[in-house]
Length: 256
Image (cartoon, rainbow, N blue to C red; front, side, top):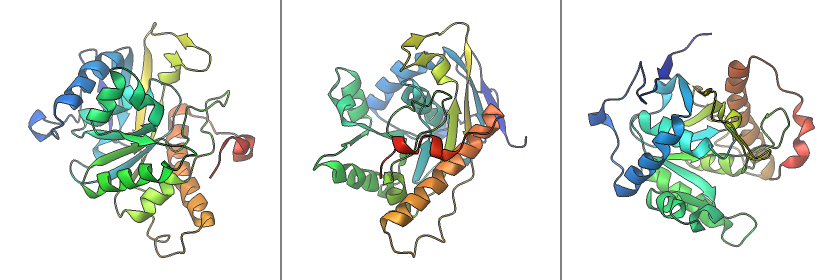
């Protein structure tokens, strides 16, 4: 396989392709608090990054990832931070009401996602503003960790397409793998030892130019959503070295 790889050692430093501290986006007190909490969590695994240089060092971008473990936000936040940027996560609104963690995620620029409520539109409006301010937004289009027994992605929500089409910013697919082997939220198994390898593979920005002038109806949103998640899936196939089952297997799990 081609591409640029970087491995993060036990000291938390990437052995190749690192970002100089002087080039790092400044985040403030709450980002520092998040780093103090999340960096030690990532030491439970060995991190391997591929094509991390595709994350823009400045300006807005929408990072799109699959979701396999409750540990994902911590390792994804550290991955983005190690590459010089401050991630703003779209996360379920219930997380913002949790002690300590809720204050950290809100203070560091997190965007609450309201499902099936009159506030649902506020999530996207806040994400639009964040992108317009030149920041990084991280989204899990599946909305929650997949329940697929083989840990393939579930059918995604279309909010990712709305954000991608209404903001002319890089839409970057990223597959992450290995966190579920440390902490499996559905089997309740926590197995930090022996240490597992956690992968982040970054794809090329998704070219959406052919879709931007089309009528934005539900059919278009679903098509663009599937296109973006297919790019994430391509990176996941590279990591796993195996092909996923037919999408029809889990189509009943997702909604528009």
